[in-house]
Length: 405
Ligand SMILES: NC(=O)c1ccc[n+]([C@@H]2O[C@H](COP(=O)([O-])OP(=O)(O)OC[C@H]3O[C@@H](n4cnc5c(N)ncnc54)[C@H](O)[C@@H]3O)[C@@H](O)[C@H]2O)c1
Image (cartoon, rainbow, N blue to C red; front, side):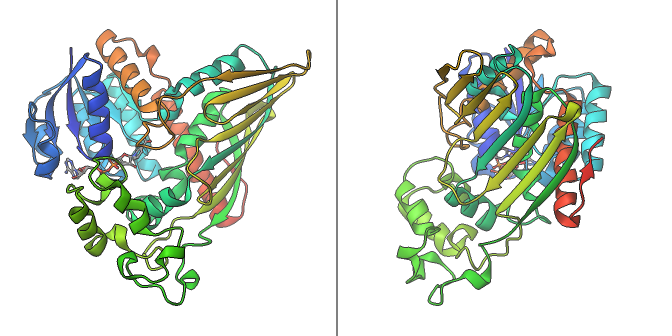
């Protein structure tokens, strides 16, 4: 039985811990979170009000899940590596390139099992697609088109009203959200990226797009019935259910609790009257070693869908929608459809299409067997995909093509 400490028992920490306990192969023995309501979700674990209290003691568990907010990853990651814990670290590893380098060095020095939560690598869909590509089903990969449809309400929730709305409080959009996609493209091709260029910006969620009759809060707004981003329409129907994204608003998920959060908290605000600055659309062009290219689009203005991808090879192509893979064979002229049936949708609520579960299982396997092969990204792989995000952001801001090697 693997023993676990959870540092940051918010939505990600709790979800990983539940998956881990659900396997029957792990037990949470320690939990650190300043919020009593979050610690109480782990009645059998020793509670700590801050990760530093736990880190002041000798190692209390085999492994630690670090799921604090973006800016609070580096300190616990360095300290728990020093204490010899195996580490499951939420992305982004850190919010500066220096932090990421420091974490990777500490992980390598400690020799412990270390995995960054690149959940997309672990979905049944990705495993099937990667196996087809590695088996040469479409020959050599020449180019890729990849869409991250963030979804209109998810953008409003996380990146306009929520925790990832401001670069200075968390980080920029590519690192916060699309580091998954950049990492996934590297995983699919098995190649490092050499150059990137990028464009994008904050197009819509700006004060000048606010309807004239809009109020500061959706509960008071006469424009609300016509607004796609209405907080009352998004959250009130979820009242009574302890599910993301409602759990980000309040621990009291009753209708009264949700109304109170919409009245007083950040998630009840008009999307045109927030203090957000992260982009709502961005494209990144990438060149890989050997000349393979990829074009990536992240956009808010979609339904909530799985990522959509087309991979173009010398002997065939594959179109994927997060579930179904349509393989075109240029030799036979035939088309084959492979259904991968993801166990959940693309969101955190849906476990990222089985990625959360797959990651936790791989981590527990590595911790219990001391064989890292189940972990699909090495510390240096994670470093490369994080550094790609900075390179692309630099390109967006300067208009230059940026080298990543
Ligand atoms: N892998 C993914 O797909 C994915 C998806 C969503 C979020 N994330 C990342 O996961 C991380 C956590 O996100 P979340 O939505 O769970 O956030 P959250 O705010 O729900 O949870 C963070 C928790 O950390 C706790 N905390 C704050 N200071 C602490 C301290 N000193 N010691 C211990 N705990 C402390 C907070 O009280 C909170 O409960 C973020 O970095 C986020 O970017 C990853």
